[in-house]
Image (cartoon, rainbow, N blue to C red):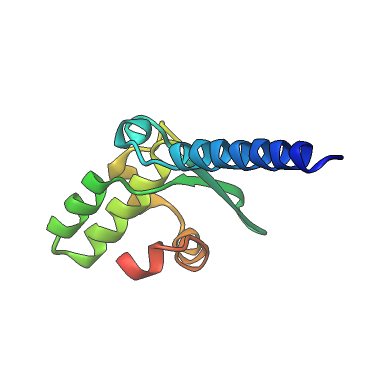
Length: 117
């Protein structure tokens, strides 16, 4: 390959790399609208309860949680908030009837749960 061909090949390679960097940068740009109706579903597994699916708290959930002074009510709200999208039949008022060991599992296995209750 001649020096001119090497120079052209190097320029083409650099141009391609630049376009790839720009594409990746653009792909990483945060757009809040992309997250408004998206629920990331997480799954944990427990021997007794099996597969448990939950979603992240929204900012509104966190703000509502902060308003609740009673610790027990905060726990019930948080359980309902993370389970309501994956188990739509679960009513907020029924959360207190769930078995206590489930709360233990959620506290241990849901990353943000233990720090909020």
